[in-house]
Amino acid sequence: MQQGPISNGVIKKGQTLGRILRSVNVPHGVIHNLSVQAKGVFDLRKIRVGKRYAIVFEAKPKKVAAYFIYQRDAASNVIFDLNRTRVYIDHKTVDVRRVFAKAVINRSINQTLIENQIPIQLAWALADIFSCSFDFHRLQKGDSLTVVYEEKYIDDKRIGIGNVLAARFNHDGQPHYAFYFNHGDQSGYYDENANSLEQTFLKAPLKYSRISSPFSKRRMHPILHRYKPHYGIDYAAPIGTPVMAVSDGIVRKARYNRTCGRYIEISHGQIYETKYLHLARFAHGIKPGAKVQRGEVIGYVGSSGLSTGPHLDFRMTKKGCPVDPSKQRFPTAAALSGHARDQFQQQIYSFKSQLR
Image 1 (spheres, rainbow, N blue to C red):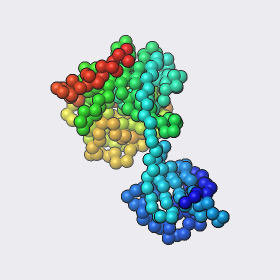
Image 2: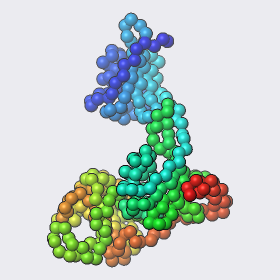
Image 3: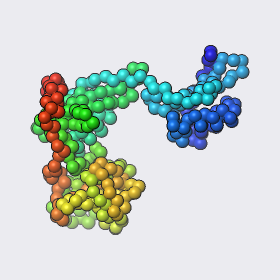
Image 4: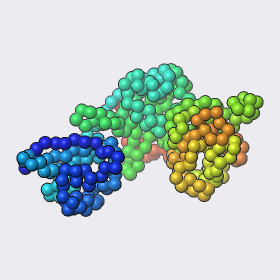
């Protein structure tokens, strides 16, 4: 069938598939049949405001809609064939390219990546990979990064990044390596000695921000104007920044008081407890008795209680005594061994020379 003109548009608030198709005189019966055919292929409730669509018309004097094309994401479209009343996904070809990049930290890592024309998503990926190796909030001027990673393209347009394949961070004079390795049903990141980089505790409870006040036994309180201990680490971050549980545990408290504002207290077995203060709100389902997992979002940064501005006051106790979270050493997942270790060492041989 010869196709005629194409009408492009963007989903607006209140628009549905039915409303759009009725506006171009598609019969109600066809719309109903399409909604039936869409089940198991695409949930029509997931048509989102701001997404692009196109209506393809037949090449006739009187324009009749032949296809409705919804851009689900950068890599796929949902095709609604109005003549055959069928619905299917059209996947675009994604080209994965390997990229090498290096940079020296001047100010923040975000600013460094921007200045070196490196995708900002790489900062988030690296923060996750090295989250148990060192604290991204403590990066210093002069620290350096060398990385091999994947970029995804469609029609020569970059749509995002893939896996970080290998990385080296020189932080505080010490090299930190990470290599991606897939062995069987498991995949993850390991250092140059095949030790897992995944620990039972994250180094920080939120993505990259800034430490505004470290753990201290004697700090001038910004509101009370007197010296007192500050048994936590303050992370300055915008209101609404997601806060994560640093390890698996059980919520003991999720409440409000005048000093701490909205806060959460989590027990991690018999030894550690963590506290998250001055939250704007709790995440859905966070209440006493709830089980949480490492990396799960439990709340959002705010300025509730005795606070001078948006930040998270993160605290940790060990057997009931306050400790500096940044100085604790936690166990890691099992290292590679046997045949898997041999495969790993062979795989990373060429990467190690690139990262130096």
